[in-house]
Image (cartoon, rainbow, N blue to C red; front, side):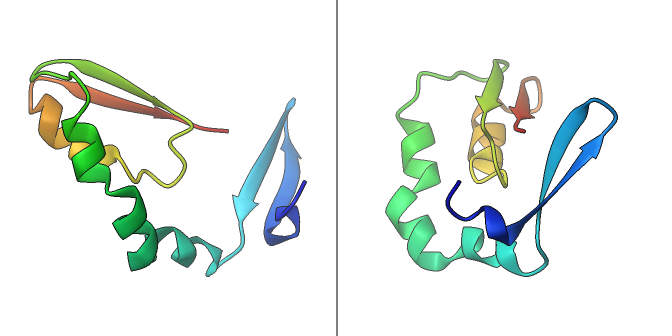
Length: 83
């Protein structure tokens, strides 16, 4: 799998886990990436209302967590799931 050399893989119980090596996660917060993806604008286009529960499947580093949380408000919840 491309890029796997940047990750550490180990077995925990019956599950295989992946950990990003220190410093590698910095690329996820690259300003160019945020400009390309525009999480706030994307979330604004999704029909989510205050009080909703949102499931972010494949949430990765949580790029959409803050905009989703603002949209669902204090009565809603955002659940992130990733490997």
